[in-house]
Image 1: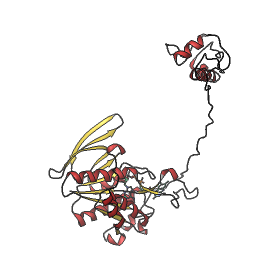
Image 2: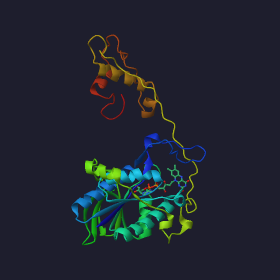
Image 3: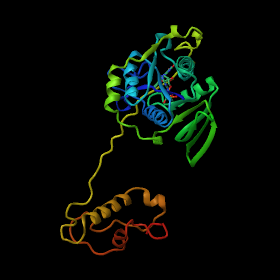
Image 4: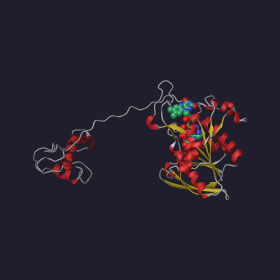
Length: 322
Ligand SMILES: Cc1cc2nc3c(=O)[nH]c(=O)nc-3n(C[C@H](O)[C@H](O)[C@H](O)COP(=O)(O)OP(=O)(O)OC[C@H]3O[C@@H](n4cnc5c(N)ncnc54)[C@H](O)[C@@H]3O)c2cc1C
């Protein structure tokens, strides 16, 4: 069985910055990682290899030369071969052009290592985030496509069948279809293993194959890179971080007289803060006043509010305020 996993090297999303003029990602100086969903794809392929004898796992990426390290990481996890599709002609590709080149590369991988039974992609990337590339490849190669897969129940190359569980908003859908197929995987499909020592040693010495545009004599050059990409991002920006000022309520020793716990004082203070907002009016509460002694100092007389707060939430059993 031949499994191809498409992986993309992406900037670590915690470090993302966008050029305000070109609206493109600033990649310089940003640490690069393998797209997390793609690592789960590699893990799934390696698990299939461990279950089914004579399975070969080829990992494929289109990207700059620096993406070699992403392929090496996948080799350390158990992939057999890594292919870097890299050429200036491919640069600036949108999902249309990306899926075209990857589909051509998968055809090539089939010629080199044998027919491809299964293509695995992540459900989306952490940078482009469109989730279009997997389905784009499936459409170009006329493969059955199974998206949002959270479990591969069975895959049988002899019978040419695959059964998966798809993660839907309101449940799980079990789908069986024929091979060759393309699946896009979600994070919950598996836990990615740690690389073994032999895997790491192999990865360090491993040199991925590099395929340039010259390796695809039949390719339609008008469908590559920026020229073949009709998508234009009008504007992109990083949202301003939201800063909220916090306030600590209550006190470590309650009201200081041993009458209330710190939590009770905090609850009373919170109740008064809420009363000071427009919340009571919006909820139609009437005749609700501030709670006595809620500042946490001095002894306070029992009041109807106290009772409710001690019960928990200051809202009567019928759901209305008192
Ligand atoms: C802010 C921003 C602006 C951009 N602006 C433009 C623009 O103006 N014009 C333009 O042409 N492009 C632009 N791009 C780039 C382009 O849209 C995508 O990065 C690229 O086409 C892949 O799409 P994606 O990242 O949404 O992949 P998704 O569809 O989310 O990826 C799904 C899966 O497909 C596979 N996959 C995706 N990409 C690759 C790859 N390169 N190699 C191997 N497997 C892969 C992986 O398995 C991945 O998990 C922009 C990207 C960003 C983040």
